[in-house]
Length: 247
Image (spheres, rainbow, N blue to C red):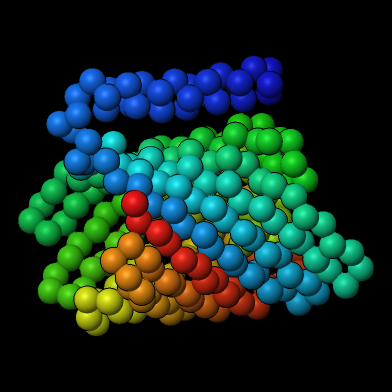
């Protein structure tokens, strides 16, 4: 059953992509709406007795002004004072329907995704389905967004911010306040909330982004742990940095 679901989902994504390519060739007048970004990010989850490192490759592209697709493949290394292991997670495919509703400067997005396990050391036991949404508001040089997601987990999945493998559904809430200081420099404050059965983590911290060139962005941030209730050891900080390329 697991292999059937995985094969069907991979086939669906391939069919969706091939259909889009053909559509673009038949209707070249719509090609100007296609945008693509590649983001490479590294995150360090620091615990009392070890560390989880996540290398994440994310490719996103816009099919038109309102449909965005993200395809991400994370690689993890979990190290303790005793041993260390590296492996892949799930291929995450996320669809965002942007601006489904707008009220002046307030906008609402809908989110749906699927995590396809690859059989690696940090892959989920079964396919993980995600549903959620985002509310954003902009004024002057500021923007405020609230994203919520709910992951449907069958048996277990790997979530670094919750200390590793978890065996229940997951609720995630991310609040972000951004200030565009200039055309090339942005600062932000983030608050993250993560909950599953009997475990939780709340984080908060600053982040910065710098536009190195028209098609290259640098970003970084640190999150401090306000509260955690984990079966694993306590987490202290999360440090992230990366680079993005626009095509």
